[in-house]
Image: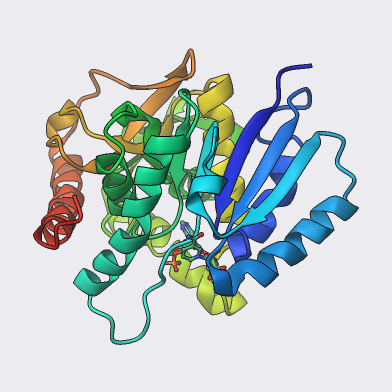
Length: 326
Ligand code: NDP
C-alpha cells in the first residue's frame, strides 16, 4: 500500500462535491492502493449539507477512506493537504456584472490561496473547478507566493471530454479511439476546442470533417454544452464535472495515456499566450508535472479563436487587478 494522501474538497456540500466525494473515496482518483484522508470545507451555510455527505461517506464503508473531517476553516481544511479541489465558488446571480462576480470570487480564492501557502504540504497540487475557474486559479496562485506556480490549475478537462465525445459521435467511432484534441483559453463560451491535430482511429480528424461543421456545429456545441445540460436537467452538470476533475488529478499524479489532455495553467508564454494568466493548453503529464506539448502549428482559423479567448482572460485579469485582488 502507498502512504495516505490528504485531499481537500471545498464546496463539499454542493452538487459537484456530492458526485466527487464518492469517486475519491472509491479510489477512482488516486488508485486502489492509496488510502485517502478527506477534508471537506464549506461556508457556514453549507456545513449541514457537507455533514450529510460525510454521513453517507461513512455509510459507504470505503476501505480506502482513512479519515474524514468537515470544517468551515480554510486553515484547518488545507493543513498538510496534498491535493486541493477548489469547487466552491460564488455563482453568478441574475443581474450580476461580470466584474462583481470576479470580485466576489476574489474574496474566496485570495484567502484560500493564502491558507494553502501557509498550511499545505510541500507537494500540494491545486485544481480549481469553481467558476470563473481560470481567474479564480490565478487569484489563488498570486496569493500563494511560496508554492510553485505550476501547481495551480483550472479545469478544462470537462470541455476536453465533451470535445472527444462529440467527435466520436460525429465520426461514429469509439470515444477511446479519439485523441489529441485541445481546449485552448478560458473555461467559458470563448474557449476554443481544436481538432486540427486530433486523430480518430489513427486517421487525422481534419481530413474527416470540414471547417463549416467545426465553426457552425462542433465549436458552439462544445462551448455551449453546459447550457444544454441545464436546459435538459434543470440544473448544471455535476457528475460529468466531477468525473472530469477525477480524470484531471488522476492523470496529473499517474501520467497521461492515449495522447495529450487539456489543462488550464499559468502561461509561460507558450504559443504566444502572454504570461500572467491561467489559460488552457495541450499537455502531457510526465513524472507528476504538466508539460505543454511543443511545436504544434497553429493555423489562422485556430489563431483567431485562441486570441479571442486569451483576450477575455486578459480582461478578467485587469478587472481583478483593478480591485487589488492580485
Ligand atoms: P456546483 O457544485 O454545481 O458548482 C460549483 C462550481 O463549479 C460553480 O462555480 C460552478 O460554476 C462550477 N461548475 C458547475 N458546473 C461546471 C462544469 N460543468 N464545468 C466546470 N465547472 C462547473 O454548485 P453548488 O451551488 O451545488 O455548490 C457550491 C457549494 O460551494 C455550495 O455548497 C456553497 O456553500 C459552497 N461554497 C463553498 C465555499 C468554501 O468552501 N469556502 C465558498 C463558496 C461556496 P457555475 O455556477 O458558473 O456553473
